[in-house]
Length: 118
Image (cartoon, rainbow, N blue to C red; front, top):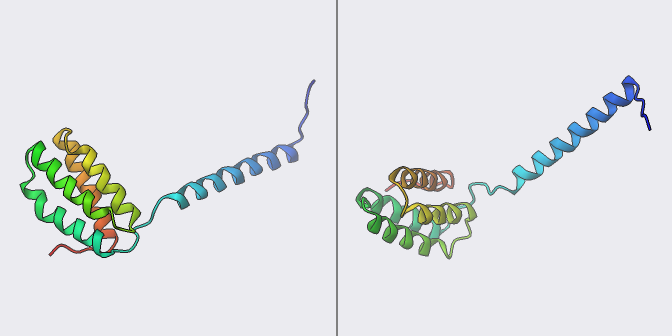
């Protein structure tokens, strides 16, 4: 069976596909958490991480710091900070580059939510 499409039908089809793809992209970006609000548990996690990060040079000290930070975020309503804290915890036992990348993302989440270093 052969289907013949004229130019108008082809243009309408392409536009319809583009509209669907744009809708999917908007829906996906809406699911990503924004900076959220900086509640007390999130602020404590951010401050504790900022205080402890310079001294966390070994994997053991990184794991200890990450565990403390994750405990603070257990009570936060800020999903983004909690997610980044969990990622820091997962990277604590990895290579230094992974740890630093996780730390940078966590610090960015804190600052985006309004936290400022003391």
